[in-house]
Length: 328
Length: 294
Image: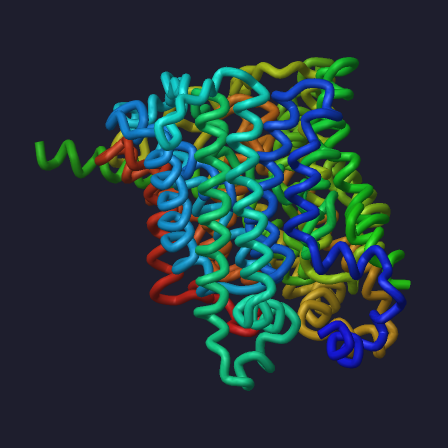
């Protein structure tokens, strides 16, 4: 097995470099890091935030990094997941697991709606159309006050205990809350790893590299783009649902285009098109935000400057740069 | 009743044209920059916002609105030149997403700098005395200032058209939009043309921000909303087409003001519905070239 792999990719066969190892066991490594992560963080709430935004960026990266389409409307997918999860609990009294499922379904469905329209355009248009459509979603949720609470946000998503096979788990305890959310995020990492390793994942990357050639090879490029966008919506919907449970409120700002911009920044900072990039980006971004917010309220200025610097000097991101070193 | 509602509709139509004029100015700058540089300027809204704030500042130190009309485009245009030269030029040839991402980051910096200088809350912006009041336009009284906005937009469009179609420099710009490589071979410094186009585009954005200020006041976030709406205009009109931007800008303005008359709660959503329809029926927009799509 290893021998065939080495004969196919001779240039990577440098006796077990760390990069090789990290790629093979990527999902397990992610799981291990996530499990010990809260022990090294100053407080657990930050660790939970990093998990959720890391998952959000993981879903976004599927479209941005692997499919090569820049979406500026992912807030709509994240936000719909959060709102549907919240609405299921507040208005319909669904149990927590059903509410999370509703969030994932919401993300998938919203991605289908936006995707069908946005996929009709390519290149630079895609960013503009997704941004405009997510702005439309923002106004729709904003105006559906009865369901979403409008400007005040959706309040009262109180999940105090979680029933699991007869076990009652205390969701208020921050450490337990972290590990419950971590279980979902780790599962998502395994699913993502599986998708990327599948033949479908290979087609996705082929479409990014050369759409015309992929079409000539008999793959349906439009369908691949749409399916990838929808899958991305599922991950972002899950992240949104977990966010709703974590915050116990869904603020309307979750649908704002700055939430779309945030995930672009996280993915670029960590390294687009890399497996660990989104999580690393989320960790660095949010830790930095925590540190900087202590001494200035003008965090956005720093964010913008870092982002400009990243684009100009550091386009491969943190993990992307490390990989480039590891391959050498 | 029927006559009254006809007048009301006609007035609302004019209000829509005034709103549309702002969209037109915003979108032609965006379209001009994209058509030449293939850069989607995500900071265009920020330039628009800074334009309004520069106007506010000039008036606070004793200037008047007419001085602003000249000074604001010059200041914002110069700022645009600096941005292109320092930040965007290194990114040419590195993929179409990078300038977009960079200008997005830049918009954060610009908005936050304005927040630091002027505070987070908005300010009202007084309509100049001469332009206050309303005039009878046949179907009813219409605010004079909105009429002025329509007129000023028409003047800018005419000047831009004359510049692009009748001057030799305009010829170079049009040639550069079609095939920059050939233009370069012919001995024209294309990067300098791009610099100037970016300056013109941002100057028009600043001008639009100043014109919009008396209509809606100034606030640091004013650029974000119009950016999303201008994307609708560009998608509907066709990216890179100035004629498309004019037609679509006016159409979007009229659609917004008509829906706010008949179904106010749908006013914000209506233009996105318009975009969805255009995307389904004619994905490249009214005047878009199919080649620009990919």
